[in-house]
Amino acid sequence: MASKDAMMIEAESHLVRLCIEAASQSRDAVESWRRQRRTLERMPSHLAGALLRRLLRRRLLHPSLLEVFKYCIEDIDLRGEISVDAEWMAYLGAFRYLRSLNVSGCRRITSSALWDITGMTNLKEVDLSQCSKVTDAGIRHLLSVSTLEKLHIAETGVTAEGISLLSSLVNLSLLDLGGLPVTDRALTSLQVLTKLQYLDLWGSEISNEGAAVLKVFPMLSFLNLAWTKVTELPNLSTLTCLNMSNCSVHSLFEGHGDKAPLTKLILAGASYSDVSKAFLYVATSSLFFLDMSNSFFNEFCFLSRMNALEHLDLSSTLIDDNSVEIIACIGANLRILILDRTGVTAAGLGILAGNVPTLQNISLSCTPADDLAISYISMVPSLKVINLSKTNINGLIHQAGNEPEWIHSLAALQNITCLERLDLEDTKVSDAALLPLTGLQQLTYLSLKSVFLTDTSLYVLQSLPKLTNLSLQDAVLTNAGIDSFNPPETLRTLDLWGCWLLTEDVLLQFCKRHPQIEVRHELVRNVQSDQDSSTSSTPSQSTLKMLQVKQKLGKMHVSQSNKKTFLDQRLKYSREELLALQSSPLSQVILLERDVI
Image (cartoon, rainbow, N blue to C red; front, top):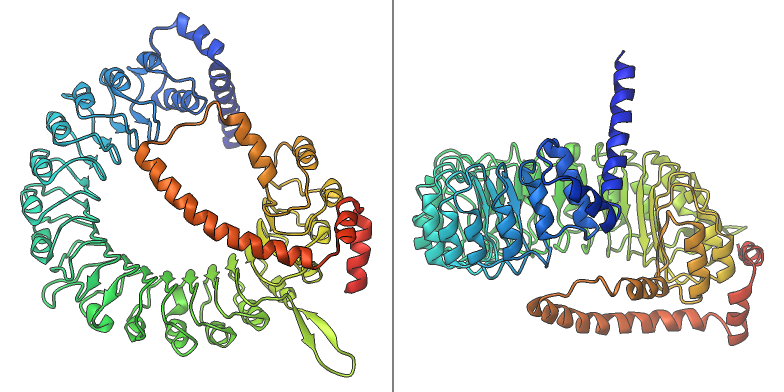
């Protein structure tokens, strides 16, 4: 009976999806049912929401069409839609049962546009983040919505005076003031918000004096003080999540009273006068998430009390093999360990092996890890994700003796039967080293980036049965290799960025043969951008300036990187060999590679 009910539910869901697809197929389809119905008031809210989202994705939703949804929509998410303006808000103001409105990043929204939602009786959540034209006048309009429980106004034009006005919204449980000029005085004026559980004050003007006010919020569980001048906090007995990234931390809490039951602590980029003292009054029995990345300290003894940790990020710190033993001592519950850009080597991983029985994700990008490290990593059978990008991995170990031979170091990974994701970008792995990867039957994501990879890699990797994402950047792939590539049925993304021998025609032919696969390549991107240029959105002036700066920096970095890669690839071949490679069949490449092996 249960099986029959499940089949009926599945059939009904499929029918609903087909109906929504037909209703949002084109402008003509929308206009057809729009002429027949003035409202969709009898449509269940979740189905109306699904239809509205589909129309929005397909750029078929316009302000006047909103009118048909005004009796059936409870939640609407328009974040980042550049066309949303006062006209849209005028229609949204008539949504009788609207509970949640998200217009974050809609830069045409002004304070006056918020007048249309004044007095709404069911509205509980409003997100105006990054709506820079919303000022204190807009806050005054919101004060009439007494039912508000969650308000996001980060990166708007609201001043300290406007923030003080929020004291009228006594039902607020979440308040996001990130990036606003919140002063100690403005924060003091919000003491009446006793239901507050979530408070975001990143980048504000709060000092230690203002932070002392935080203890008057009896239900506060989340607090973000990143990029502020706060150096110490009072005891906050209900706090479970704290972010003090890029702060100068002296002491997280006072030495008296109940300790905060922290479960998540983020201190990325923070500095310390004494890191052990900073943690002296932190209750560690329930702390399962700790991020101390991009911080410079050489004392790690404070970690020895954190036996409940499941997520530990020490990337870009001074940790090395000498300190890894502390992690091993608290590794019983670790699931995610991030050691990118540290001095941890194979010796340190040898200490960890056997002490992290539940570890599922380890990241060692930009470390001195080499092929010996793989043998220790393989002793952690619970791993699902391994990141060894930008390391000294070759994939082959030369074993000396009477008859010297090459040992496949990656073969050790076959001991990890549940491995799903492997990142070997910017290593020295070559075609000859990849054969053992065919034994990773659960692998879904493989990322490679090397000038030592050729068509042989495609031939080897096409046998991975569950592969969904394959990246072969900067490889010396030929048109013949792509033509002969028979991708796994599960493959959905193929990243060929930097494979400069490939031509546009061959790539487009591959896309036509395998429409389910998203191909990423310079030539494919250019074609897609030409096709989509007519519908592309225009960034605001501030965003455009930021993008231009990033683009200049990116060009500097890319040009240097491309120059190096370009030389590396062409130095391996003569002009005649390059021309031959472009038209060579896959079998010849494989034979040549086997001869080398």
